[in-house]
Length: 124
Image (cartoon, rainbow, N blue to C red; front, side):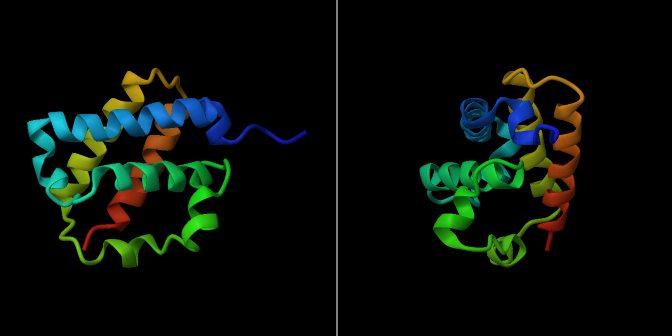
């Protein structure tokens, strides 16, 4: 018997959708996130793509890959100026979204640590 994936441990699709929706809501509401918000031109599309990416990245259905192929995250983010402030703003919203969704420990810290590493890799 295999252990549950991070996707399953956070609550699968319904919970992941809540997290991603809250993430973009926080990005729009938080003055601290105005820099990262300005990099997003189509929020509904960005929200859908983030949900699809995270679904597969967390061990659930590979929705993003099925639709668009390999994510090539670094290449897709190179046109945008992403430094430490943008990484930190993105993480600020993500940490709050996980907290607001009530994701329990230790999975919350594990996933957020992995997301920080991913966000740091996007810096250019």
